[in-house]
Length: 99
Length: 223
Image (tube, rainbow over all chains, first blue to last red):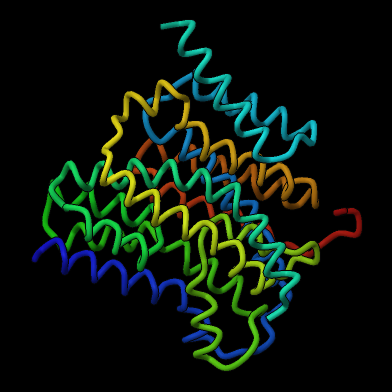
C-alpha cells in the first residue's frame, strides 16, 4: 500500500511539474531575455545529462571510451543509431579484451 | 496537429527510445527484485513516463521514509518546471489544451522539439514521445519478466547507449550557435562541480542554470 501510494503521488506531481507553466502562466509574450534563456535550455540540459550519466557513479573509462567512439562517429555525421551501436560494440570489445 | 512535424518527431524519437528501452529493462528488473511485482512498475512507467523520478523513488523508498522518497523524486524532476516554461510560449490553445500537450515532455522529446529559430514544436514533441513511451513501457515489462542481470548489461556495453545518444543530440544543438556552446559548457561545469557534493539528480537540476547566459543581450555574430 505504501509503495502504491508513493507511486501515485510521484506520478501526479510529475504531471503537475510538466504542465506547470501552461496551468499557471497565462499565454502571453515573455520578455526577450526569457525567450533567449528558453532557447538555451535544451543544450544546457543535454550537457548536464551527459555529465551526470558519465560521472554520476564511479567513472568507468571503458564507458567513456565507448561514448567517445559514438561521439566521434556523430561528428563524422554517421546516422545516429549506427553511431550509438558503434559505441556499444566498441565498449563491449574493450571490456572483453581487458577482461 | 501538423502531421509532417509529428512524423518528424516520431523519427527523432526512435533512437532515444531504443536507449530508453535498455534503461527500462534495468528499471523493471530492479523493481521486480525489490518486490514491486510486475503490474506496478509497468503502470508506473506508463503513467509517470519519467526515468529519473522512477529510479529515485525505487531506490529512496528502500532506504527511508515515503515522504522523503517522494520529495526526492519530485525535486529530481524539477527541471521539468524549466522545460515547461520554455515550452509554454510555443504551445497553442487554451490552458487545459496546452497543459495536456506539455504532459508529453521528456528530455529527448524536448530536444527533438527544439527548432532552429529557438522555439519549440508541439507536434514534434508529442511525436518524439510516442516511440519513447512504447519502448519505455515495453522495456519495463520485459525487464520485470526476465530480470536480466546488471553484469550482463555491462558486459554487452549497453550502459553506453544513453550518454551516447545525449552526446550526439548535443552535437546538433552545439552546431547552432556559439552561445549554445558557451551555455552548454557552463551547464556542464555546474553539473560536474555539484556532482562532487550532491547526487546526480540535483546536479542535473543545477546544470539548467547554464541557460542564464541567455539574459545577456545577443550580439550579431552568434551564428
